[in-house]
Amino acid sequence: MPHASASPANPARRTVVATAGAAGLTAALAACGGSGGNKKSGASQPATQQPSAQAPAQPPATSSAQPGTSKKPGAVLAKTSEIPVGGGKVFPEHKVVVVQPARGTFKAFSAVCTHEGCVVSKVAAGTIDCPCHGSKFAVADGGVQHGPARKPLPPERISVSGDSITLG
View 1 (tube, rainbow, N blue to C red):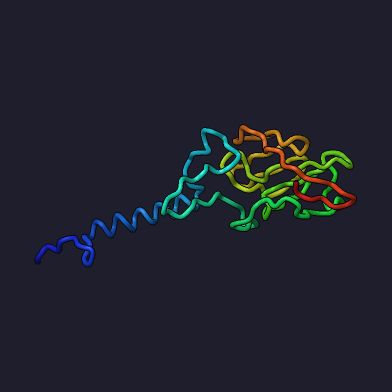
View 2: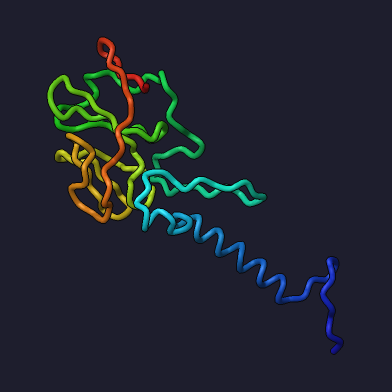
C-alpha cells in the first residue's frame, strides 16, 4: 500500500486528527469557561483579548444570559416596587444585579461572579448567588459571604428617579 504524502489537497491523517483535536479542545475550553486566567487573579471581568484571527472567548453564563449583551447607561431596569427589601433582581442582559438592602436604599453590583466569570442567577435570603460554584455575595455591600470567590462584586452605577431605576 503506497504512503500518501501531505499536501494542501491531501493532508496527512495526523494533521487532520491534530486539527480536529485542537478544534474540539477549543470548544471544550470555551464551554467550560475558557482559560483559567481569572482563577489566580480573581478578576471580576474576563481577560482582555489580544487582536487575532481566533474567535473571541465567551465568558460562562447561565441559561438566562443573552450573548452579546452589555450594560447600557440610561437603560430602564425596573420599577422600585419590583426590587424586594432585603433582596434584589438580576438583569443578565445588562450583567447587573439591583438590590434593596434597606427600605428605600437601592444598590447595584456587577452580576459577573468574581470567581470564574459566571453570571449570578438569583438573590435569596440576603445573598446574591452564583450557580456555577456556589459563591454567595452580601446584598448590603456585594462582599463575599461564601466562596470560592474571594473578591466582592464590584459596584455599578444606577439612578433612582421617582419609581424608576436606570443604569448610570
